Length: 491
Image 1 (tube, rainbow, N blue to C red):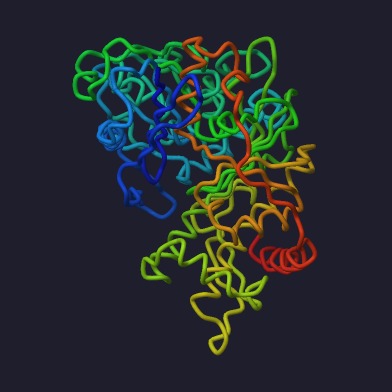
Image 2 (image 1 turned 90 degrees about the vertical axis):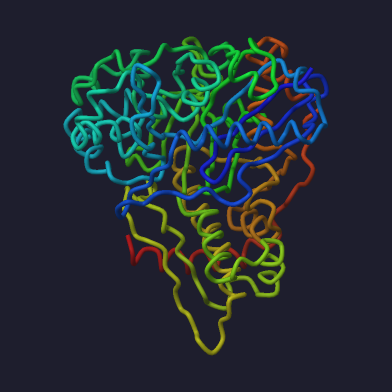
């Protein structure tokens, strides 16, 4: 028996097939091999085509089938992980009305800030656990204000995972977790926020039916099953945003447990059991995958927009598309602190932890007689790590104090330079696991159909493949403090 996991990322769609009994990943693929582009029609804007996500999903599944490592007819359930906060709009025929305004788009910051003040900061933080900021609700308000001809055609608003589920099944559902990441959910009243609906004048009919994260969100249609060589009628039984799903895939589910991810964006994600919030709204709180009406499980999320995208920009434009492995080897030749060269990596839109400011990316202290492209390779990875430390300090102010951080050995955690800098700058041990979001989504599907008796049952044989312990804290801390002084000049 196999489980299929789909991870709809910003750069590509990844697909994994997991043996439900052993928990082993049978195959994992991605499509396309090159990074999917982001449309930036104006400064601070970021859009992608939902129909392109669907095309890439189909091709990724067919690519997995082509490995011939499993029998497609033995797949019994599908789980979906997806890039958070994106706004997808469909009409009554389930046709996409415009490109998705995705997570790193900054156009609606002022709309969210105005809502925060008018609805009331204390109300927003106590009920929504966040400022509306530039999340999905504010993005929808932007469409209403600027594209009324499109807004008036909307039948349903979806998150990216809701859209892929719809394309697979023809059915539209959402979850409390998805609504909370869009800043639509009132945690105190346990419903879609009436205050937010009233302020933006959104009709409640725009929202899909709400179901648990682990439940049947629809069954695979005959037409799609035929295209994908899968059995019609198998359920889509799990949907979660990429960061809650990353935490789930690492078995980070209970209060005090912490996960990290360093993909296109970077995230530290801690689980709590109380309706807490950062008074400055620099970090975000969402319903975790195991949040319920009876038991609070909240994910406190610190997000850095400029993470893997900063590293990939460096590879492309500084390294002339050098291989990442080679780039890491070159960076290892440079001492800690990159001989004074510093990188501020915030070049991918407004940064929540910097009060939604757009300060851009910066290369500082460049010495034309000393520094080379190799110095830049290292300074970029260190700058990203220092951004993580800056964010973790904010989380520590909010009582998230990890004794260990779990991460998949993927993306930037594949780099020994990055991981060493991360462990020592944050002064926290790290456990690396052989997993990713698509494998986590597959296991989530197993929970959703009841194959696993509970969430922990999905991780019986789950063990770290590598452990990193801090051993150069003083050197990295000194470099971080100098970097922080430089950052303060921009904020």
